[in-house]
Length: 110
Image 1 (spheres, rainbow, N blue to C red):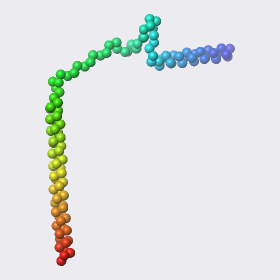
Image 2 (spheres, rainbow, N blue to C red):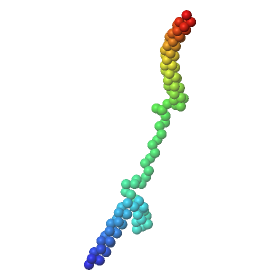
Image 3 (cartoon, rainbow, N blue to C red):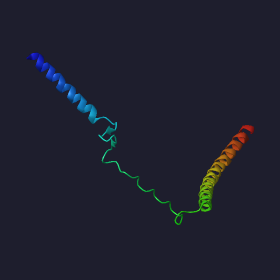
Image 4 (cartoon, helix red, strand yellow):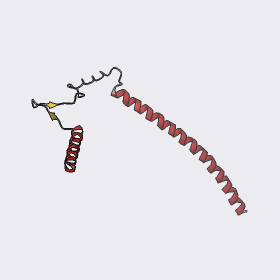
């Protein structure tokens, strides 16, 4: 009796494993006619491709290039202005240091 129970348990276990394998199997199941059963969620036809825009709203290549050049020019001008301000500030400080050093040399010479 115990042996029959263990055999039945093994059979049930094997059936459960087989069911799990079938559930997670990604292979195609072949029907009686020899054709493959496909997933019902899979569309039969591919969706139509989206039509490309005729370019009515898109800028031309020349316009894009001009816009890039304008943006780069504006950035360069902004940076040049910042450099000019920094150079002027440094020039004033350097001139002040030169005057201080000249006074020190004059005091040492006297």
